[in-house]
Length: 229
Image (cartoon, rainbow, N blue to C red; front, side, top):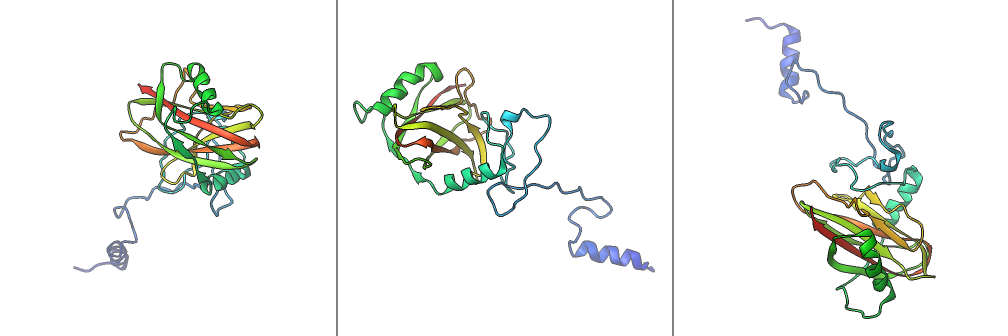
């Protein structure tokens, strides 16, 4: 059998694995993506059909493309890069069982806020506590399980952290925002009642909670509340 030169070249190319799809089929065009906060200065264009308060950073390669669990408000690439860099280098918050420190004004504030922002929910796990200088960050991890809904409440006593912010970062690399409180003042809530966060993943997933003293300094307390879906 006489093989034409074009046929020989095609067989050699397929044998070397240069064509990752079946020979004769067209390879789908690759879509561009970028992760904010990395070495790349480019970012993925925001969809014009998505509500602006839910816009999120483009996920890095290999990360989940699941939508945010709560509204996301930081859209400026430079602000987002600075936020993610600060969250990545933040120290761990001190974790303490509820009620372990009697009379703590930060924890007392959380207890007063719970009926308003986490109605029908119970405290989940320990309370994250600490102190922050102005512009400082702290963090802790929470496991969010399927079939459960979550609310995260943060509080700083009056006259201390004037503007407390909470940012929820999605795994696996914690370079994508999954929710923000979007509030001003010494109270911060993600997943406000009656719209708590209810993850759809089939297994428990560890999310990172970033605590940020946007203005002012002092003590804080952050508690996760949960209920069955």
